[in-house]
Amino acid sequence: MESASSSAQEARKALGKRLAEIRVTAGLTKRALSESLGWHESKASRFEHGKRAPTERDLRDWCRACGADSEADDLVTTARGIEGMYVEWQKMEGKGLEWAQKSALPLWDRTQHFRFYSPWLIPGPIQTASYIKALLTSIRDHRVLIDDVDAAVEVRLEKQKIVYTPRTFVITLEESALYNRIGGTEVMAGQLGYLLSAMALPTVSIGIIPRDIDRPLMPVEGFFMFDDHTVKVELVSAHLTVVQKHELAMYARTFGELHGLAVHGGAAREIITTAIESLG
Image 1 (cartoon, rainbow, N blue to C red):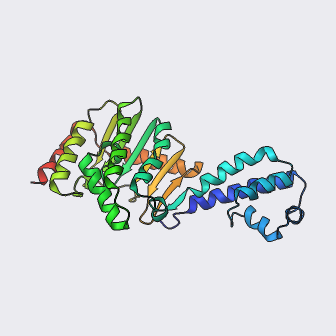
Image 2 (image 1 turned 180 degrees about the horizontal axis):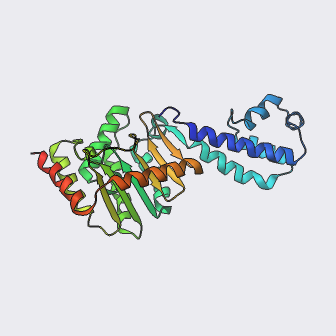
Image 3 (image 1 turned 90 degrees about the vertical axis):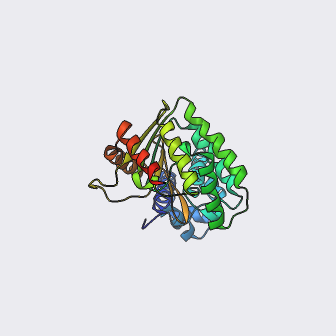
């Protein structure tokens, strides 16, 4: 992904545009605003062009100087969201995997319609405990994190209960995800067996994209959509949150196209069964 933090940068530019509109509405030049706040003029300019992230105090001072105090809280909320758009794993998981798992709970709680596309692993809502533990252990070892895997697994398992609530989960997997032996043969056998069981859940729809079909789409990264307001992408170095409307529309369209390539029902079960048999 050439510009993984592009969503955050675009959001900073949008925030800067709002700041400029507030200033212009107040009839202030950048110089006049800066002088009233004791800033160098270049500071205001960098904020407006999205080249520097304003602090909460900067935003409240800006609104006060422009006679727009009523705008401050909304701007602060927007800025906090931007800072969370592109977060390196080291920062997100610095407090441990348990904390990282818990940090996702509010988003899951307020989401009604989940759309997951995964090219290489079985996604969270339909993972077994053994698969989760193998996956999180691999992450712990690779990223050299504190050892709280067991606690993180418990959080993930508790979060999975959401599939038994009145929500919808549309999951599209590449067939290749069925062959990546995370945790070894026994763990994968259990995981694939559970995948067949999960297909019977009324809230869950699982589709498999056969690996031998002609591909009209370029390969894309795995991504998770939460209603129509948020997309999460797990990169090698960081965790990306997409909230810009035009980018959300691109992901929604792409998911629809990928979903259209997948087989469901009996055809999907047959593919999963073949993967189980391949484990020997």
